[in-house]
Amino acid sequence: MSNPVDLRKLHALSHEVDAVSALFRHGFAILSEYRFASRDAEPVFVCLAGGCEKLLKLTIGLHELELGRPWPPQGVMRNQWGHKIKKLDERVREIINVRASNSTASGYVRGLLGEVAGDDIVTQVIATVSRYAEQGRFYNLDALGDAAQLQPSPAQLWNKLHEKLLEERCDSLAPLAVNADQAWEDGRRELNGAIVDSMRRWCKLIASAWMTGVIGSQAKTYASQLELLK
Image (cartoon, rainbow, N blue to C red):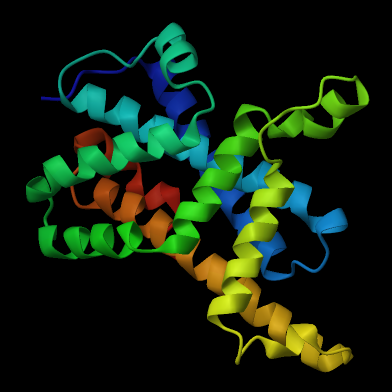
């Protein structure tokens, strides 16, 4: 039985669910029109990192309520999980895998879980936004302050993803290497679409886990507000 939540916390929960939907909506819109790293990369990182972290922490908190335990206190969320999106993602997928039999559509959820697990784009995007959330937000400011970070910057990870996609789709994305405006636009659009489609699938996995009862009754109540299945 899920643990009851007081009215103040219910309002906070509702606001956070709305925030997740807004962050992904804006993030996908920017990503769909992504053109140049200098102009578009930072807004994409902000929206996707914020959306991923909030969605994953909400899922973990709602799972705790379903187990009859209180919502994890700030100290746990901050010290155990922090901004470690990759670690949060691993934990949420573990929860979905263990509890998939509680779903009203368990086969569908397990199918999505398998698709996401085999999606290299999701893996790279999660690694990129996790790096951004943990330290990458201040990567260049640290360099300016003579405290350069040793790990790759989010921009470097992002470029690595694009290079990988170009290699895998060298025929269909060849226009990106052509100095022709329309050809470049078409290739860029396809590249953007591949990333958006993969991350939408990741969102759909978690939203479906909420909607079909995997995460519990509280999550099911807020699933329609999540707006990640659209």
